[in-house]
Length: 123
Image (cartoon, rainbow, N blue to C red; front, side):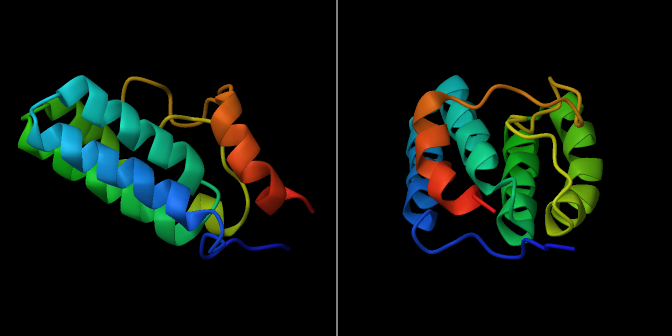
């Protein structure tokens, strides 16, 4: 069985860029834009257990900060199980990670993110 623990170093700068954009927009109180960058970071980090868990932690903290009880409740099981699913290579590809979408629904990956990830997901 192939396992996915940490994101490849070549992809990590893209993930960090999305997290920074989320933080920057959060500080400007641009909640929707901040959330969109967290979703993009989720798509990038989802295949790897460490980053997948990290992004759900950040999504949970975001939900707490804006007092979104639905998001808080939706992130708790994702935080517990998301990294495990990544570790064993069983994720719903492209899922944006928020409580507004079913946790097991595969979704279309945006083309720019797909291009970033492609070299690292070939078997």
